[in-house]
Length: 498
Ligand code: NAD
Image 1 (cartoon, protein in one colour):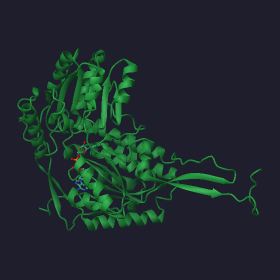
Image 2 (cartoon, helix red, strand yellow):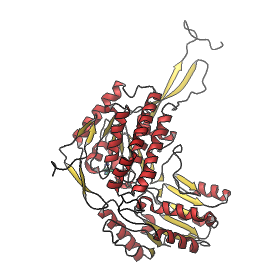
Image 3 (cartoon, rainbow, N blue to C red):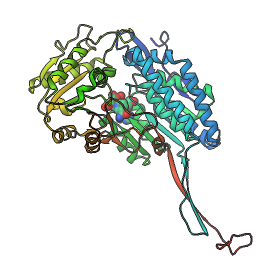
Image 4 (cartoon, rainbow, N blue to C red):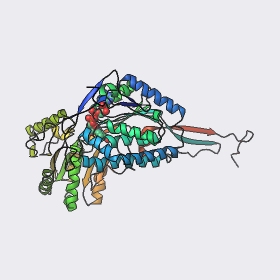
C-alpha cells in the first residue's frame, strides 16, 4: 500500500518526514468514502527533533532577532502566496474535512488572508509600557517571544485555524510547532511550506501531523515547549492542561466548545430576511461543526410562530451533498462515528420530549456520514440536547416571555463561547450583551467579530488567552520588566534636579 500511495508527511526543518516508528493513519474522503493519502503519525522522536531544530533556530536569531517590521513583511508575502494557492488550499480542506467548497473558497481562504495580513501588519506595533517613576529611575516592560511554542488544532477550520496560530506566533518572533488534526493536515502543511518560501527560516516552523494520543500527547508533555495554544474539545483541553502541569508548566491557552444561543427579542423580525439568513448560517455553517454555532435559538413567544415557519422554510431548501459540489450547502460530517453520534443525540432528544420539526428521516439517503438539517422544539432547558455540544446540523428552538428569562436561558450552559442577540432597542441590546455570559456577543448579526477584536470563550469554552487582535499576543509573548536606576552622583550621571 505504502509504495503506491502518497503519504502526508511531517515537515521538520523544511524536510518531509515520510516514515516514523509510530506508523500511518488511514483516512477517507468524508464525501465519497474514497481513501485519502495516509497520514504520518509523528511520534516522540519527531517531536524531539522538531523542538530541537526550533530551539536552534530561535537561538540563532535568524527569525527571533529580525526587526519586527521585517518579520511582518515576510508574513505579508506569505499571505500573497496563500492567495495565489487559495483554490488549492480550499480544495484540500473541502476534501479532508467535508466542508462545502463554496464555503472554503469564500470564507476560509479570506479568513486566512485576513489573519496573516493583520498580524503581518501588527508585527511592529507590539508595545510595552513605561511607568511614572522618580527622576532617578525608569521602569519599562519589554514584550518578548517565548521561544519554541506549539499549537494543537481541530479539523473544522483547518487553514483559518493555522493562520490564527502562525500569524501572531511568528510575528512575535517565536519558533512554532504546529499539530493539525489527524483528519485535516494538508492545508497547514502547505501553508508551512509557503511560509518557508516567503522567507520564514525552515527551522522556525514545523508541522507534525498525527493522532492526538501519540503526537498531541507528546507535544503537550514536551518540556522544551514554552507555550501551547490548544483549540479543540473540552476533554482534550483537560488532558492538555494536565500534561502541561505534569511537564514544565508550559503556559496553555484553551479554545474549546460552545452551545451558543441566538436570542430573538420581540422586534427581531423587523430585520426580515437578514435575520433568517444569519440564523441559518449560525446554525448550519460547516454542518454545525462549528465552535460558535448558534445551536440554541431562544425566541420571544410573540414571534416564535412566524420565526419558526420562515426558518424551517430556508432550512428545508439547504442542499446536502458532496462537499466538492458547488451547489452543496451541507457536506458530510467528518466521520461515520460523528454522524452516528449526532443521530443518537437527536433520537434521545425526541425520547426526552423534544419535537422533531425537521430532519425526518435521520438516516440521510446520501449515506451514513450525512445528516440533513435538524430542527427540534425543546422546552426542557436542562435536557441533554440543550446542554451538550452536538457538533452537527442540529438546532433547537425554545421560547421565552421576558428579557430576564431570555438571559437566564442563555446563561444556562457550561459553555460561554458566543451569543447573538437581535433587537432594535439599543438600551436593551447593551443591557443584555452585558448580562450574557459569553466571550463574544454579536448584536443584530451572527459574527465572531472582526480580526482586530479578541476572540475566546467564557466558562468551559476556554481561558488562558484570546485569538485575534492585539490580545492574541498575550498567548505568544512574555512581558519583562526592566528597571533602570540612574545615578546622578556618578561621573556622567544625570542630576534629578536638572
Ligand atoms: P479534539 O479535542 O478531538 O481534537 C483537537 C486536537 O487535539 C486534534 O489535533 C487532536 O489530534 C488533538 N488531541 C486529541 N487528543 C489529544 C491529547 N490527549 N493530547 C494532545 N492533543 C490531543 O477536537 P476536534 O474534534 O478536532 O474539534 C472539535 C472541537 O473543537 C469542538 O469541541 C469545537 O467546539 C472545538 N473548537 C473550538 C474552537 C474555538 O475557537 N473555541 C474552534 C474550533 C473548534
